Length: 610
Ligand SMILES: Cc1cc2nc3c(=O)[nH]c(=O)nc-3n(C[C@H](O)[C@H](O)[C@H](O)COP(=O)(O)OP(=O)(O)OC[C@H]3O[C@@H](n4cnc5c(N)ncnc54)[C@H](O)[C@@H]3O)c2cc1C
Image 1 (cartoon, protein in one colour):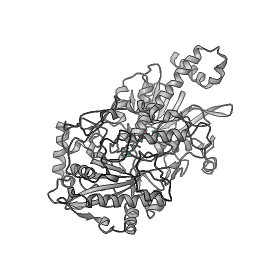
Image 2: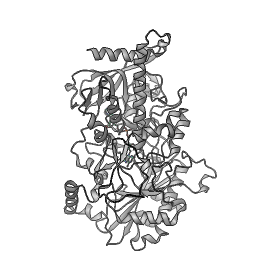
Image 3: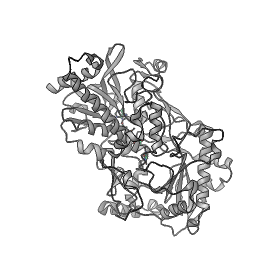
Image 4: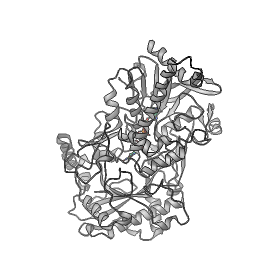
């Protein structure tokens, strides 16, 4: 059932309490409630996704501005790498989480990304070969909204049979051919790759997106909605988890069973209990914040804030990684059909919206970008520097093309003229940051410091990305009739020094924060979770979201979050079924080893019998 107040809860005890009904949380909720005897509560701070046009209409994804009800409205601390500017870090505050508010690009990561994770965690279960079935379980390819013939535009074997809709762009733009023909004719570092979801994530191609029938497909629409009528699932919205409670310790290990919930800062907390596990799916900011508020984190930092330390894990909130992004603009011919006029004319906007509402056709069926490319840096970049990318199938930088002026940085759309936006990003950054608490008040936003562009490597890579985008346009015949010239600071960015100035002035992030509750090998002293995503040194607590990524993938990351969640759901189920087998063999002398699992099983049966 969908509940909007804790007062509507019929009971306070569940087998699993999932904190965060976002990208990963909705997958976990859907998979765990496949067994009708397992009772699950999802607690989501945000609102329902149903009926929200800027969530449903793919093109409007970039209009989800910070400050709206469906965003957490986070801002970073002053960024040293950006001339001490602060930048906003949007995060979905709605069912589906950031999968309801993101820009829909679908990349499953190169094979190397997963093999690298497997090496880092020393756990084969994260290698590409082991993970592929879980990726295929998340998604299936659908026909694009305009039903054009997509033969040769994607690799069918790169998609599976899962609930998410994936499609190629359903409305062509003038840029598509120019970008792809340039890539095909130039080759080399800007080679064409038919499908970047086939394992090799280097090259230029069409974008695949989480869109079906011209509408956003999210973890809320694909996973949560179909499960909502299950009697064993409660989804509580408008409600924030503010503290995790360990009521007991077993052999010195805190056992977490309680979650305190409120709707507003003045509320008296209501406690719900998880007999088996609390699964944290609050995302790379929400999850470490909640752990820290609950006394799980660097002991000294917590004591200073007046929070009683429960478990000393120095790495909670550390290792924050994001992809830096710089928007650049070119003015194009006055007869070009960019989306600029639409953003300036309410009539045109409403006509296009009506076309989407009536037929699911037109520009609004697409995200604002149809084509992009991932590039490796030239060999010279690695003379004195190890390549931080996961392997040879991964890139270092990305270039995305938008068929109009997308005001993502400090510049606003000019009143006249037509433009294209070229976004450049560093996808293998070496900068690291952190999430720390500002106070023990759960309603105060944490201090978010992604450390954007604070290493020489990242700045050099970004300079190369801007240079590559400039060359891509200048050396191709496919732009001659179209292109008038660079706009804004890009017009004077001819030297590397000028490019650095532009970058420090305009850079933001691509909204891919990861790593703040990183998994690490089972016995390792660093990291926050083990390879089964259980919080180290605790019982009853697991993390399943982008915070467990030990290394940032060199691509857009939502597909990896979905895949992690599918993998984790099976890990949880395996543990759960295993407890059943243990129960059946209660006399087994080995059973003491599984005391935690038995405890979970016992409480499950107790709950089921009430
Ligand atoms: C604007 C934007 C554009 C993006 N574009 C792309 C893209 O094009 N392609 C791509 O691959 N990726 C993109 N991303 C990134 C991607 O969407 C996210 O990395 C991914 O969805 C994160 O999933 P998650 O489960 O870790 O967290 P989320 O999906 O953010 O879920 C966390 C959920 O937990 C809830 N929550 C947090 N704390 C609490 C609490 N204390 N109590 C209760 N609930 C809580 C939140 O409200 C949220 O619903 C984008 C992200 C944004 C914000």
